[in-house]
Amino acid sequence: MKKFATFAALALVASTSAMAGDITDPAPGATNRDVCTGATAAKYNVAGGPGSPYTTTGSFLKTGFAVQCSSNTFVTFQNRSGTVFTVGASSAKGNQSYKGSSNGGAVVLHLACGQSTTPCAQSDAQTAATAASSM
Image (cartoon, rainbow, N blue to C red):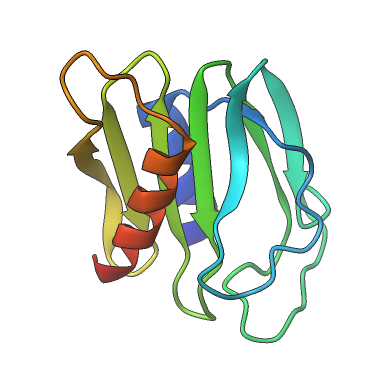
């Protein structure tokens, strides 16, 4: 449930974006999974979509879910372990990135993306997801 709440909060804060496609196997580890890539708005499934069992050993995810992405936004997650799931987000029209973790962290501001006139990129969401592991 925490993973869903983390993603839901992130969607509200960052207004999610278009993904690279369905993520069928979000295997545990510190690997960035780019869900929304700043392209056109679309809905994608992670681990088979809502209600699908995900039984990989060492995974925080237990069931699949869907993410609705909006254009111009970037969302990345890491299914780090059986106890830690992190997310990061940024927007091509904004200049701040956000991070969140199942390990005691709601979605919070991470960092500004460069100068005040520099829009964020996918790499800013990835950096935020990695930084969220220390929350």
